[in-house]
Image (tube, rainbow, N blue to C red):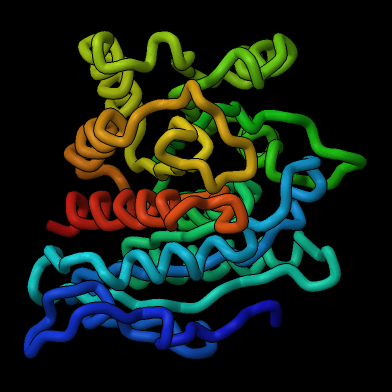
Length: 318
C-alpha cells in the first residue's frame, strides 16, 4: 500500500500543561485506522507526498515534501478549535513507480471513510492532481445522499487541461471530474490569470459550465461583486469542497510553489473569501496544494499554507 504512517516528531512547538497548540492536539494514527467516534468534532489530516502529476505537467519538482513542511508549521500554531476537538494525522499517501492512479485510489477511499466518520478532512499536497482523487471521494460520499457538490478553487490556473494519452496530471483534475460527473459538475475558479491560461482553456471552461473570476476582477475593491458571485454559487449547491492552490497567492507571499506568480492575490483577501465560504455551513472538505519547499524562503509559503488550514478549520468547527 502506498502509504506512510505519520511521524509524531513533525508535531513540535511550545509546551504547556493544557492543550494550547496544534502539536499538542494532534494524534498520529497508524495504518489509516480511521477514528469512528461520531460525537467529537474532528479534523482528519491526510498528506499527499506525490509529484508525479507535476512531473507529467512539466512543472518543477519538490511538492512531495509539501505535507511535512505544512505539518511543521501547523504544529506551532495556537489551538483555538472547540475544547473537545481532536486532530488526527493519518500520514501520507505517496506514489510508487510513477503509479499515480493507485495513490489516487487510496486517497479517494480514505476521503470517503473520513467523511463517513464525521471528520473535516484537510488534505495537504503535493500536486494539484490531488483534487481528482479528493473530488472522487466526496462525490462518492454524496451520491447516496442525492446532494449537489460545489467545488471552489482559489488558483491562478483553471486546471482544466486535457489528459496526456489518457493519463491525468496536475493540470487536469477538474477536466477529469467534469468528464466523470457531467450532470453534477459545479465549479467556481477564483483568481484565474489570463497569462497562464490560453484561450482554449477558457473555451473548455465554458463547455463544462464552469464559473470563474479573472485576477483583474478578484480584488478587494470589487468585493461586493465577488461576494454576490460566491453567495450565488453557494446557494446553488448542497455541499462545498474548497481547494487552495498556493500558486494563486502572489509570489511575494508564496514563493515556494511549482508555478510562482507576482500577480496573485493577497492572504488577507483570500481569508475573507474563506470566511464567506465557511459561514455557509456547507463546507465539508479542504485541500491545500502545490507547496514546494525547495523554493520556499524562510518557510513563508509553508507558514501561509498552515494558516489557511488552521483558519478554515477554526471557522468550520468553531
